Length: 347
Image (cartoon, rainbow, N blue to C red; front, side, top):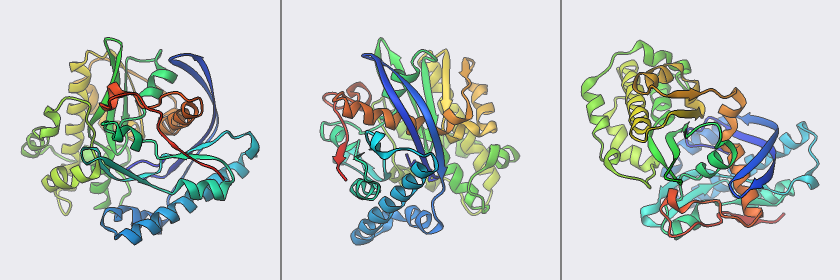
């Protein structure tokens, strides 16, 4: 799993057991995060501006990098390749425009299959988009199949913050707002990869005019299913921010904006117990501000689950695919039917 915040490649080795139609158990055998090389990271930050041939090259190179990471992981953990049913690879999202009928993840899964010698399942989102869905979010099915007994709402704070919950027995989920992407972009203005613990934001002062502008964006008035992409950030969100000055104040305001949006969603849907995962869960200042707008219970999870829940769930999506079961939920994405997402690439 490699998210839009580009904080590394998360790899998990897990086994999954079906208990009932909507209940699976898992054993997480090993996990690791591998940072991107500087060259790859730089290219990925500029990926939306590349020519067709440059993007094709990056797709190939990223596939090689993923394969190398997986081979090292297999060797380190003494995994027997013949015991692995499949590699489930999300890829790196570059374009996400379901309203125009496409979503693009790079990190060529055919390259991964050939270089690792293990069947690789990739391209989990396209089929859902072709049936009229957003192709996102895909994690909610894992939230409820793997963790449904622990909470009634699940928030993942990654590049974007997203939520999943049940409404009258039907799973609902959507992207709430931008999260780590704008926070990391602001932190990079201070030559930091991210704002550790939210310390920069904590030192800043709120810009109430900016906060009102952010909270007034049209996206927040839309009902789900809905999803966000980097294109939306570039067009609507980033133009409101300053990346050359007042960094602490901008960060403080963005954190407050995120906390408000998370709190409003949880309160609106009457969620009493919420599990929070993703890199943003480690931003102690953000969680403090979220608690200002949410008086329900925040379910604590261990660090490994915070870091690897999405990779673990994409493994489940692979297991569902192999079991010939839907892994994209129409009530979440807005597709005309549940679909089995993912394309197989044999070594």
